[in-house]
Image (cartoon, rainbow, N blue to C red; front, side):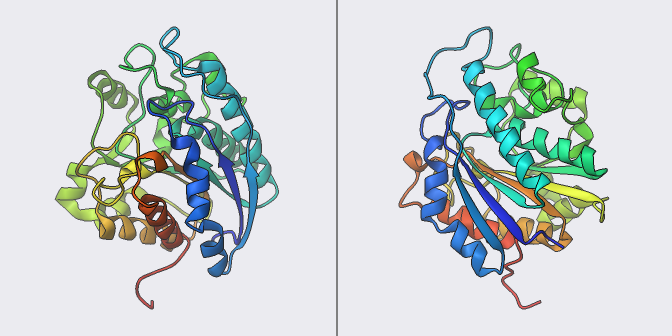
Amino acid sequence: MVNKSISLIGVPTDIGAGHRGASMGPEALRVANLGARLAKRGLDVVDRGNLQGPLNPWQPPHNGYRHLPEVLAWNQAVHEAVHAELAAGRLPIMLGGDHCLAIGSISAVARHCREQGKQLRVLWLDAHADFNTADVTPSGNIHGMPVACLCGKGPRELLEVGGHVPATTPDVYRQIGIRSVDEDEKRLVRESKVSIFDMRHIDEVGMKRTMEEALAGVDDNTHLHISFDVDFLDPAIAPGVGTTVRGGPNYREAQLCMEMIADTGRVGSLDIVELNPAFDKKNQTARLAVDLVESLFGKSTLIR
């Protein structure tokens, strides 16, 4: 059964991104009434406010990484905040911010799972595999590197955020909705054997079968972490992201994805990242994200 005690943690930074504006994501989710909508579902919701961290200096890459010291500071803050909520028996929802912050949140969840003897499964809902390294990155933006860092490929500082290197192994990930992977990144993903259910897979077998495959093996001892990058969704319904990629899941596919995750009753933590109000239209992407998160916590379109 899903934990009924929810903590919202705002992380207002675009430190790892290639566009400014994801720092406004947490407020957009609050404006879209995330807390109140979840409370209406009978959940005990506490908003912890926003974490603090360094401003974005907007500098070019240094040794293949942009803003590494600042990215480290933000992720350390995220790690401590997320781990504290889990240790207190609450379900943390990180309101991002860009996807580099998953280094802090997932390393915290992995640490919690080691402490509790639980099996970790991460559903990575994203247009991108985020498995770049300094050697292959076209941009140096660390939001394209979190999965690689969590799997032990990246700068030592980021690998050590959770105190355990690597923080996770590639087999815990199921990447869903992928449709944009850099050339050299493809090789890294193949070598690491991360499970990827790309858009072609979803087109061929449908979202239902894809989710059955991605959730196979999830049991009572599984902690399910959802890392929801809003660019997972097709930009026709979710324009408010910095890196749009055409051909993502439509509204019904995204709803089914969330409802099937909810059906497991194993959701233990959530990231909502890369929401960029600067590119949005009247906060529609934030409202859609809130709608989908409600489904993740059990709102179904049918009486079942």
